[in-house]
Each structure stands twice: as structure tokens, then as C-alpha cells.
Length: 331
Image (cartoon, rainbow, N blue to C red; front, side, top):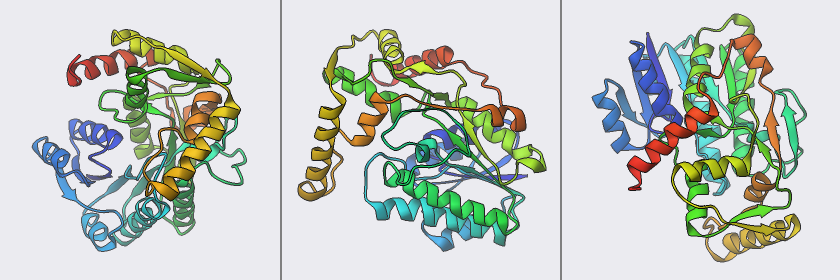
């Protein structure tokens, strides 16, 4: 049985690849990071340096795969739409074509709950709740378009399952917690509007568990979408304080009104687009939304239909992350 993983050199993809190898599967890993790919090769993975936007490369890479996990994506709160479109929409289209051409037994697609949010407060969001009229950024927009490609592939007979994991963290994370840590280290963390902000986060190995459940789940799960979290809502600022405490670092806050923060972010985005050649601004409206609005998901469908149960608690996951961070950041 050969498993193919796109985004194999990314945070989630690397963890999935390691687990699949440990389970005894033959694994083909597609990714852009050659250095990380070389490390995967040493663990027994057949690594292929492939751009998902390159149709021929994708078709060739997938020809011997039995199952495909599509974890690869351009994930960022800021960037050019065309870059997101090529990676997330065209890349998914090419993976689908490859799966259809080579008669892959099942495609498991990693989407995002970012498609639910639009600068608002939403709690207990279910998979089939109404989506916003406009998406919060180019990443969310193109991931939604990619889901539409997946849905059409299912209607055309391809066995597919989609998961939407929320705010993945753990050892190796280079996005969520590291960004917050660096803000705290450089100065004061802004408290925007409401001081009580409830969020979902998900330990990375729990997401891997969910992906593996999708591998052998029943026929009734095909074509479905599943929210994946740790199943426990956390207070955003309490979480940050706990992480910084484990790292032995202080947290200073600076209160700012929501209106002021949104106005500042909008102005910074304008300057970035028109004067700084698209460089990511230090504050975006999406970031303001994340820091000021409670956003939580309902995972009952994943529990009931996939048998998903978060195995590693948030507290245990934070300890693992803190240990890794101290080992790799010199403090």
C-alpha cells in the first residue's frame, strides 16, 4: 500500500509522513523544501520535489499511489491572489486529475475553517452552517474554491473526504504560536476590544489521528467535511500567558479599541498594497479579528462519523511545544 502526501515538507505533512512510515506504509512525499525533503528520505520516504501548480509533475508523481493525503497549500494571512490560486486551486485540481487518472482508492483533503469567518464572532460553528458572502482573505477564498473542486470530483465518482482543522500547534509549528511569541518578545501584545476571546486550537498529532481515521472510515463519510479541533475552547490570552510562562518570558499588554485597530489595519493594508509592493503589513484586519473575536467549532460530526477523539490534551501539547521551542531557539 503506497501513501502519497502532498505538503510533506510542511508542518502537518511531516508529522503525517512520519506516522505513516512508523505504521509500515510505503510513503511518497511531495513538497517544495528540498532540505526537509532530504531529511524525509533518510527516514525511508520517497521524496519528490514537486510544485502542485505543475500539472505534469503532479500526474507523474501520483502514478503509483493507492491513497492520497492532500495537505499541501499556500497558507498565509497575506499575499498575492494569483499565488494562492495557483497553489490552492490549481494544485488541488491537478491532484484530483491525478487521482482520477491513476484510480486512487481515496483522496483525503485538508481544508480550513478560515472559510467560516469574516471579521465576526461565531461560536459552535457546524460544517454546513451558512458561509459568509465574502471571505476574510485570499487564502480562505482559494481554499473554498478548492473545496468546490473536491465536491465536483466526488460527484464525478472520486472517493474523497475533507477535514477542516483549526489552528494547528505543536513541535515544529512556525506560524501560530511563534508569531504570538515574537510579538510578546518585541513589545506589548495588543488586547483589542473584548478581553475574553474564546478560540479553538488543535494539537498536530490529533490532526494526524483524524487523517488516519479518514483513511479507513465507512462509505457514509465519503463526500463529507469534518471540523477538527481539540474539542475544548480556550481563552486566547490565558493560553498565551501559559505558553510564555513555560518559556520563562513575561507578557505585557496594550489595550486598543476594536474600531481603532480595524482602521489602523485597513490603512496598513492599503500602504502595503500600493506603496510597499505587497509586503505583509505588521497588522491586518484578519489578525484584528483573530485577536478580538471568539471563534469556535462544533466537532460532533467528526466524533460520531469518524470516531475522532482528541488524544493529546491542550495542556500536554503546550508542554511539548514549549520543550521543542526552548531546544530550538536557544532559550
